[in-house]
Length: 236
Image (cartoon, rainbow, N blue to C red; front, side, top):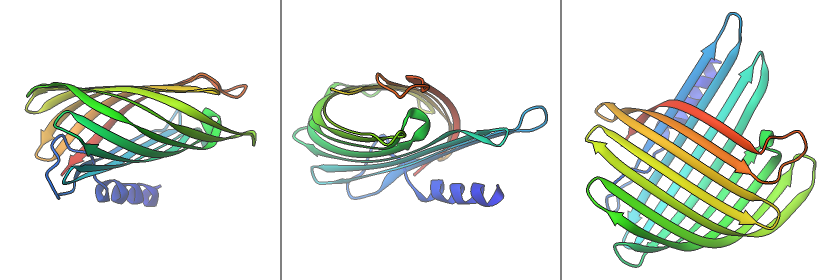
């Protein structure tokens, strides 16, 4: 377990995360790590890791994100998921942008071994103040899924999303992201609510509530997954 924790810590601190203000030509980001272990009457372990990075070059903005979750209860794995995302935006103006994104996921407890999603779309900032920002986006794309039962699906999708951010104080912020990707075989809806509090310097604590719903799942799999995470965050 010590070797696993050390590897995850190196991964998290070696990655980056998307900062609120991305400086031209400079990588910026944040990294998160959460770990909970109980012993005695119950034996549970939960590891939650996220690393993201952003780079702005001229009119282009490049985002990268990795997330991972693993949970065990009494030696039995109860959650095991990995997600990789790349997103590129081309700014048409201060408030308008075109974007393309590629996502790969592995989450057998949600009913699929592999899922790949590609989207092209348009993003617009409808609120831009010192304290509040709101971005809306819409796009079209495709999704390919390999289910745990060996079946495969491929479908076109329509995507709609919103991202809201509130800088409450210099040391605290709130974010709410909601997205829906609707296809002929499955509709995926996700809500991510985040509260971040700065501890000292580049170190913060974040509480995140993630609710993800798949309209179509295999027998025995629940439609909705809910994840609550408390993580330490390093910003750079």
